Image (cartoon, rainbow, N blue to C red; front, top):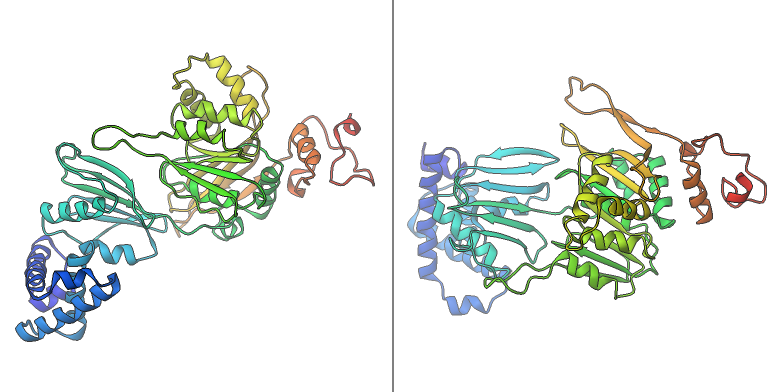
Length: 458
């Protein structure tokens, strides 16, 4: 392969990619010899890039190689990316369609686009170059990675979440995962993406406004944070909201929002602030709503107690594959607290705290949909009883390899319809054709909602 073609397609094949890496490294070294580092430090990021591109253009014109305009532009970009940015990762970070970047050693770069994972023909020149890129990333958050500290999980100033694990823990070489969070979607936009339908939107909006406690459940990458962010947009502006996260991902638009983020221990193993610490502290901050990005340990008990003792309308996410599994996982996580509580007592806490479980699923075509909305109707220490009120029914996959289907809606339980009515919220038509235990009585003329108050139902 000629030099010209290698630059035009810089990373095709391991050998060509490494040879081009040496060419880029050579010009990077020449560039450093030509510039005044003291002068560069006084420039803005955009000015530094423009200055390096100009100097490098003169170097290539003077010393070669002879390239077309497109090849010259690509070589200049790669060298400047190496000097200022993150090398081969720079164009990936600039691509808004990419939501996740996964580097499995220097020879394997994968990305996720539109829910699908694909491998790109990109290579790092060596383990050393990949390690240099990793060190440049973690240094922006005052962290370090080496054999004594081979794992790092951090949030970049630009919002991306970064996970690094290097040898000896990683047997495939330095491994880097960058998760980029998409912009905040509204529930209406999620309808356009097929994640839910209009009747489900009306129901979820009524639940949030009526201060039901919601648990958003799903597997990794199923869209829990995206849905949680969309649901939070339904909270009235005048309420005081406290968000608690491991890595700040939520993008609430209300004015009265307090954002809290946990902190890992420093290199000496001190200074850690956990999600549980933040949940406990938030109860002293007079919150109207508490939103926990994800419960994964002893903080679950504190969250459940907050939900059942005056902080109605709170939201949280949990990793689980079904709505029933979500409740069992909450019970297990609650038992991880240092407070020794019998499982029966934890069941009482969950029955008292949780009203709705919204289950998400990521399908084989990469689409993310609400697979089920279920209401928790059990009380006290009795076994969990979930009543599904909405679910996605998928059809067999066709030739287009896309998941098609429809959302099925079922009548609300009578007690939940009453609770919505007492909060001044209407039951959406698709969920109000009858209740478990018999049809709803006719609506009296004086009623403000579609269903009469408790004493009139009898």
